[in-house]
Length: 130
Image (cartoon, rainbow, N blue to C red):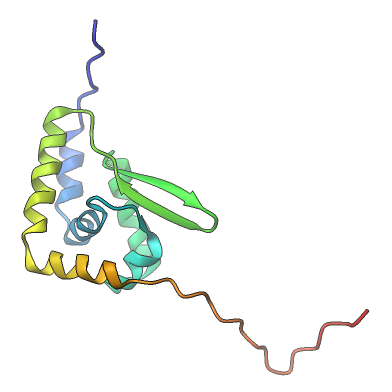
């Protein structure tokens, strides 16, 4: 006997899809695994706000997170519930046709994570020599 998929919490899914920032995040993740630093760069929002929205999407069961060193990478996790999966797929297709979402995706192709430069402290003591 085949195991039935757990029904999706549809109110939570629709609430997750009702926010413009979360839609932009999902659009960027469509077909991609995206580092949180790219979201911050492209959306021009602070990391705490981005992380809060990503946590909401994770609780809705449509986003997966993976840690790589100090960075978190996010990707879409298709729901096992057929109705929820159809809703998410339709939403992503609609987003892909919108010009502002296409502009975000274009910025994603040019995003980069340059290494942080070392900060030189003024008047800090030099390290002791051995």
